[in-house]
Length: 526
Image 1 (cartoon, one colour):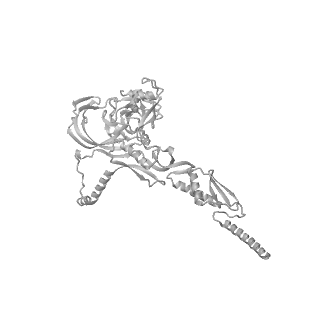
Image 2 (cartoon, helix red, strand yellow):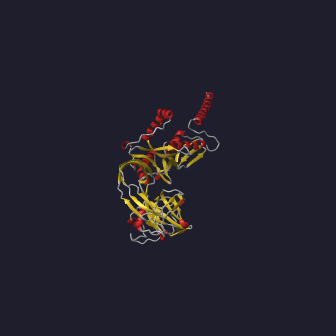
Image 3 (tube, helix red, strand yellow):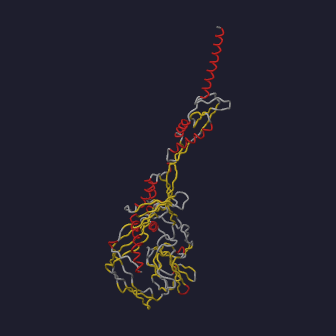
């Protein structure tokens, strides 16, 4: 009995030992618990931006899990996100401890990061017009802005903006142009026809196939071409929302005319009324903009600077319009030369009578300003009767004024014009303001020694006269003589203009004697 009791105690002790051992091994290998090892820190608490996101048993995993969380948050938005991220990992050595699943840690990290976005950079587009830059939220806004620029000038939907990639640029840049879809289709058909049957027959016969002359009703009146005057570039960007402009505001800034500040420097002979005509701004508006002017009667000083504003859009549009109109016109004056009279003597032999004609023209515009016109078809309904004038050919011993009328805008002598490119400080001529296209005549008979483009003079003519004299005519719009040509006093040689270093339509007239400039007003009337 005693022996049995001792065996029972022995078996009980062995059972307890086995049970403890099994429990220990179960705890040791239980999933979710870190085994105790005397190797230092083996249990890590992870804190992101002050918030606990879980625990791990391997510190090397932490950075990778944060990277995955950042990537997941960034992928959930089309915009560029910037995060405030501060992560702390606190380790300790434990016998065992419960750790979190990696996916749970990542999920908690994402939640913290979404509440910690410091700044959102929106996918957007930067539009560059020369040096002017504006930022829009999407490519549709870019198209609306540019389309509004051409629609402003009467586009009926025929012309549309086309954005194309610039293959010459290293980074993705789009350029803008204006396309006429219907015209492209017609040109493609014409090219096909000529490349086929018509070209074969043209080659066989050796004849030049000429297009039949159009009747007035055959012309397709209206806008023929449109394009942007400035270079337009569009680039993708990521920008904060504060820098993006709503499209309606962008249209107002870019398409509508803006009052661009400018400075006008008063010159000799200027009056406020003349300045108002030059800059196309009413006198009372100029007075209102300048504190130095008390009224429209205020005295101006040479060199005084006046603030003026010039209305111009940031994005200009060129266009060509085909127009039809009926026109009353005058014939060119016909002259009968009389070698016994001086050039100052004239007699009208026939009075003129206006004619009537129908005309189709191509008119070129820059925004709303006409910059040129070409006659495509003209039909005279009633012929104009020319004025016939008999005139003398003998050169008198003096000069005559090279234009009829005109207003003196700059006198001979010293002037300070630092803001006018190409102008000299010592003005060696007299300037008469006159409408564009006014006839310019030879002040004295002689030989043309220069006719054409002459640097800052623009289109100019030099005429040599007897006794070492020379006259010069500059800033012309059209030269009507050639070098070596003999001209008579009073003979038309050019049309006035505003070419070269010029601030407006006028005639620049010089007289030089033996190479030395002299005051023209000592030789010709005002």
